[in-house]
Length: 458
Ligand code: ARG
Image (cartoon, rainbow, N blue to C red):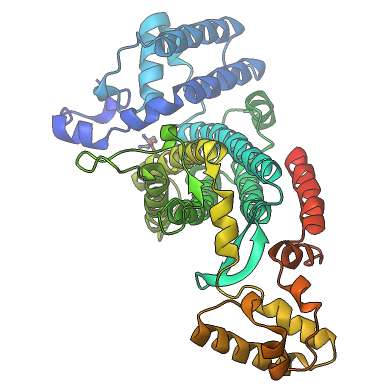
């Protein structure tokens, strides 16, 4: 018999019982549910709503239920519908009438809202830890390969050479912003709905500040209707997860390209690659592809929740039961993807020679040659056109800018002198970009320090 069956005459249909149950997904939050109940009972006793003896036996009873759930010996029954009733029914079965007083001044509506916020806070905490671990890997990789030059691209065409470290740090800053989004979602979750009861508050003298304190919430939510029906913090969580997955998908895409024969910039560790069942030579970047693909499901979780919430009247509606799975899925997916990609980046090897060779291709010194002319007095727009014509000449001759003779250069502009050779050196081109945030070695050294400080501050 369900705990709410008093006004029912007929039994529940077996199919609808199963259809309506949330026990499977709720199992993730049993510890949070029990923590909420222990805080509620303690507060009820402090307010004189239940006796100290009843509160003590409820507390011990809940601890015993938790121990059975911890060690897996607890037998769940789908007829209990959700974790709230599974815990309460077990408590009543164990300790009798004291257990039946636990639900005083409380509803499953404020209970599920409380559990979910406590659980979301835990999920966000572990996501922030995962984010920090990934960012540490990026900094270490940038430090370990400082000075390695690679092509920088726009439109996936060779543009200007950059330091590999600079490229890694670009991702570091994306994930730094993701951390801030996760932290903001944590703050949004950090408010206590308990004490709102079904929707309107309750006639018992509940101390909501006390349960907030016991459960580690920043404050009690000031409106009972809002408290039981708000799931914005899950949207914040899923948005933060989606953006971070999007960043990971960009990184994955580059890793997939870099490990192809066409690029050959990196070799992935065997531990982060797979083979083919038919082609013996294959070593595939499966896990980068999988992470790239999982971005879709996380965005699906976000969109799903937005649509579930759309037009929902106040206050609790059973639709809200649908909010949990997607949020848990988004958090677990991002967590695992960060872990996987951190390991992949940590263990991948760079093919520095291939990166350097590619950096010498595609006229990547062209901007610097134009700057050379501009610094000698030619208007930049004119210099751009002169170098454009030189590139055209190189293309017809099948050579690079560095292969042109001084005469050929002079016939394009007599501003060219012997010192042009220095402008064509890849390392010099990179090093010269000394502006704050640029790819020059000195600027990237400053950036590495700032990155380390940002990581230490989070
Ligand atoms: N199983 C429900 C959920 O997950 C708990 C709250 C149910 N409340 C209710 N009045 N049906 O959302």
